[in-house]
Amino acid sequence: MTAPFVPFTTWIWAAFDPVLIGVAVFLGWRADQLGKVFIAAIAALGISLLFDALVTALGLPWIAPLSRDAPMLVPVRSIGAVFWAALAYAGHRLRDPA
Image (tube, rainbow, N blue to C red; front, side, top):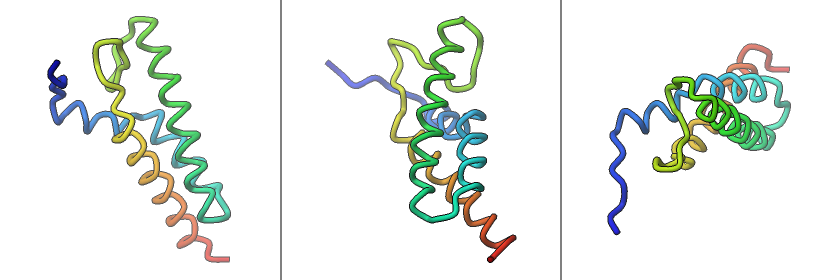
């Protein structure tokens, strides 16, 4: 059995999922400790996967859909979630260093 081929554009869209970005940025901005950035990333990953599964089940078009015959791209989504949450955390710390 060969591994499925996934185009690079599909991998990129998984990291730029709007729900993933929105939840990660919101929770990363609200984090008051660096360790909470990872909790924010896990929450963003879970919420975005549930949302993507719901959108796919309804048959609506989406930039990073989930399906039975396509990979979920969890590593890319995880790295994207940590990136967006850390970026928001850093932005909040730079804006309000207290």
